[in-house]
Structure formats: structure tokens, C-alpha cells
Image (tube, rainbow, N blue to C red; front, side):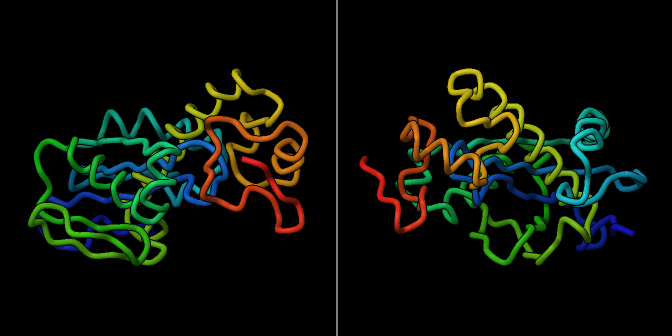
Length: 199
């Protein structure tokens, strides 16, 4: 049973990201403020849900949330500031879109940088504990998946429609065969050590 909030009566947002471990595409973050009595029997950590359920939940969250924001941080910036900083920047940019401004932020994971002067708490596996983080995880995942489906059309040989940029055997085989694209993260180990990649 997911909990409605962490802070009691404060106007609270949950935030999470998707795509941190991918070899290609953005890291995508979302932030969500849910109404106090929000309830949904399907909502859970997005990793525990089927794709069908995530896309079923997406419009429900968007319609019922008091506010939500979604932000992509792209490959060039990930390579420039590293994936942890890019994930946190994405969360900040998602929170920035919220109206009203939240009074408290709960963050999935154990790393965050203060946003404005708003109190925050990091929660390990928070997407399986709190409704607003679970909702943010669903939005981050669905928005990122839709983006990966779009760029798949440009480079179908990597099958991003299926692997979403994660380091599957198939994705790595395609990198070995075709090299890399503008969407690949050059700061990541795109192939195992024994297979060198020329940039």
C-alpha cells in the first residue's frame, strides 16, 4: 500500500527519473503533486508495471494531479555534467514547472541537491512507497519511452522501440556493427572493455 505523503499537511511533490542506465537518449525526470485524497489501485513503481498499465495510468495522473512537470536532459549535457547531476537537473527542471510551488519535495533515491529553499527528503525505493513518487516514475518512464519510439524511426537498426536505449545484447551488437549515433552517450561504456569503439 503506497503512502499518500511524507510530510503531513504540506503541499508535497514527488520526483523521479527514468533512463539513468541507458546508453542512448535522454534521462527524463518528472515531478507530481497529487491531491490529498488521490487513490488508484493500479499505481505502483513504474518498474513493477506492464507497459500497458503505465500508459493507462499516464492520462489519469495528468488529469488528476494538482500539477505535474516533465523534463528531458539530453546526451550532450549528460556527457558534460555526468548522469547523476543530469538526473538531479532534470528533477529540478520538472519541479520548476509545478504550479503551485510545492512546500516539500520527496525524491526517489538517495541523492538530491536543494531546490530553491524547499525542504526535501530522499527516499530509497521511494517509487514503491509513496504515491506521488510512483506517479512521477510512471510519467518519467512513459514520456521517455515515447521519445525513444520517435528516434527509433531515425535509427531503426538499434531497436530503441524495444530496448529504449538500455544496454541489451542486441543494442550492443548494433553499436558494434553500425557504430554510434548522435543520441548515444559518449561518456558511457558503450561496449565492454575488450571491444574498443572509435569516436
